[in-house]
Amino acid sequence: MFSLRSYLTSFYILAQVSAPDLSYGLMVGLSRARVGAYMAFRSNFTSVDPSYECTSDGHLTNGVSFWPGGNEIFSCKSFVAGLLVAASRHVSAYAGAGYGSRSLCWDDVDGTWAEVSDWSCSGAAFDVGVLLNWNRFVCSAGISTISFKTLTFNLGVGLQL
Image (tube, rainbow, N blue to C red):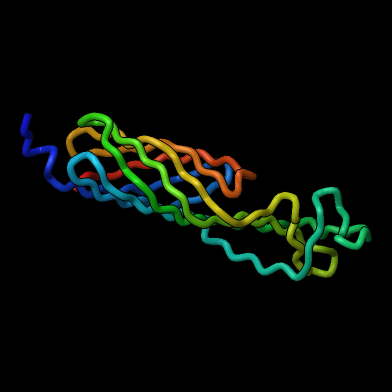
C-alpha cells in the first residue's frame, strides 16, 4: 500500500551523553523510505599530551617503578557513522563504525604526564542502538565500544525535523 509518509525525508538531531566514560556529543541522522544514515560525535573535550607510558600497577615499560603525583586526566572521543533503519513508524535501529580513543594519564612527582597503557586505547569504534520518536520528539539509547576494550552506554534526546 502506498503511503506518502514512508517516502518523506526525516532529519534527526540529538544531544547525547555517554557513561561511565562521561562524554557529550551530537548525533544527526537522515532517513528516507525507512533507510537512512547517521553520524555521531562524542567527547569529554579534554586534551591529554603524555610524555611517556606506565601501567596501572605502577611500572614503566622498562620495569622501573612509577612515582605518581596524585593527579589524573581522562580524555575520550569518538566519531561514528552508519546505517539507520526504521523498524516501525516510531522505532528505528542504528549501527555504525568509525574511530575512537580513550586515554587516562597520571602525573608523576615531577609533574610530567604518563599515559596508563592498559587503561587507554584507540582504534575502531562501533555503535549500535535504537531511536524512539513520538511526533517530533526523539530519544536514543545505545552502546559503543572502542576496539572492543571499552563499553559505553549512550543516551540522547532531540527533535525530528
